Amino acid sequence: LERNKSHLALLRATLLHWGFQGRKATAGNLAFPFSPSDLQLGSEVVTVCGTRDPGFLANWQRIFSDVEEYVASLSSPKGLEVRFITAGLPGMPKLA
Image (cartoon, rainbow, N blue to C red; front, side):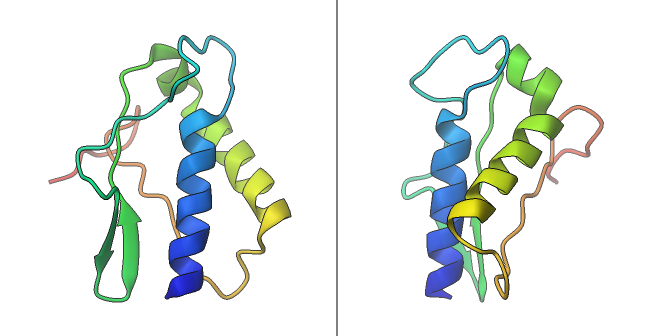
């Protein structure tokens, strides 16, 4: 569980400050409705966040892929139970 939390924190922080074409702000790409932003639901650890940045929304699949690849080069995801839930992004369902 602790490795899952650490890996999710690294993914979240990297995604928050990841550079991309059309980026408007360097302070952060995401907003978090909760503090602390990482929540434990049983054995799962999740982060709920959102954005209205049009550049991020237009390129989210590439951004997620790049972030996952970069973080995997720093911390192997092998044996971890960490995943992105892409609800509410273009082409994806909204959270119910």
